[in-house]
Length: 245
Image 1 (cartoon, rainbow, N blue to C red):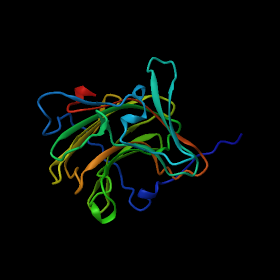
Image 2 (cartoon, rainbow, N blue to C red):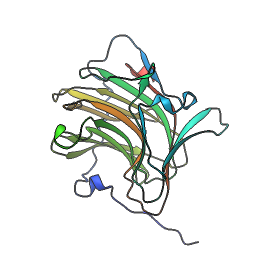
Image 3 (cartoon, helix red, strand yellow):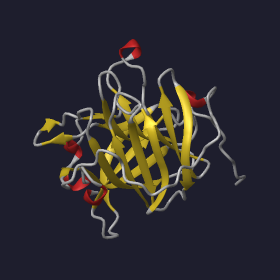
């Protein structure tokens, strides 16, 4: 069988792909609470109800499986060839959607394994509202492209700024930690760790949009029309410090 290399640029990046600059200083996020607190356990063993909503229109779907590798149940987000998205949207705590609040720091942790090295979007810090209701569609976005986990800060006016990247091997598990200091002025910050290494330490950015923000995990906007995309996710957690997740 003849091998084929898939080359694409996601729709959101067609005109704005910029060189990536890796920020790598080991400073703590500002405004981190003094006391650790695990807010949310999003492990797949708790079912898809850990998400406030699941955005997987047919034929896309979310499922759980156990590979008998010691992890227990994991999520599989399946985006069929030519489709747009399969994502878990926001989080549910105590039976209700969690209310994120500007001015706070949130840490998220999870493991991810992807079917290919060109997945498109695998995480969004998605702004609430649509169109003119927000200044930033997604202040922070992560994509798996060209066997790299790539991270962008998207400033008001849809200005895409590459802030870091790290090597990504499809078919292998990777640990991601993300800390966000959610600020509506340009006093916010965020950090990204990949497999224990700091790949982003971004400061003086706007990380909280007009109507607020919520996390999304899965697969979105891969722009690949002839290949299914799958993002397996394990051990989702949210807390107030890095040690929580």
